[in-house]
Image (cartoon, rainbow, N blue to C red; front, side):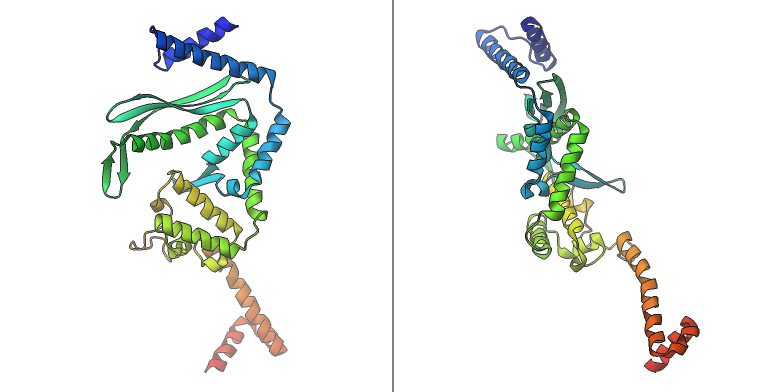
Length: 317
């Protein structure tokens, strides 16, 4: 068994561009890493996960308001809204699922780009997935492309790229129904677990988007198609999802909101939700007007809408 693990470890080292070292220091490091792998496998076999308890721990974690607010991301693509579990939620699921190893490693680096590997490994079932990717040492800004030379900036850029790959690896290993239950539990927390008034939470969200991304309340109202006074819990959850997407650099401000200096390209400035609301509201207005006229004069009940409108116009004249 030990020889098979050693062979598998050596093969992974060669595939990752790290051949078996010949010097003493390299051999010592490789031996230490090998012993750590053996220890992880041994402990996973000695203490296998209780899936029922793991799912319960994940659901309990999703009842925390701070996690529920950042549990999902959302961004538009091809005229549709793409949403899914965020990086923070994937990490919490992996931690509570147990016997999981995940993260990223920098395999190579030069003056222009870095090569890194994101991975997730279920030690108990020996299921492993990984992503190898390149990160150019540059940052795209409104003023153009900025070349990075500071090691700290480069590390933060690589970590930002790697976090999304790590999330993808984790979600590939964790059963889909466990992830879906966690997202539903977070949505339930957002709908019913809030103690502060919706008005105060919306004001806090508006201030955060304004201070961090210079997004005005007018832009937000234009996006939804109606005034902020009509916002509900679903609108608040949507704003938090957009903020999470912007924080994770999964989307840009221009993907969501029309700039104040740009003309409104949405026709009459109303979203489909607002148009449907107005369409459903017209019959209600007519019915209310007819009911008010027939209540004042029962004879008007047979005259129809045309005479009722004429009577209203006569009163105005």
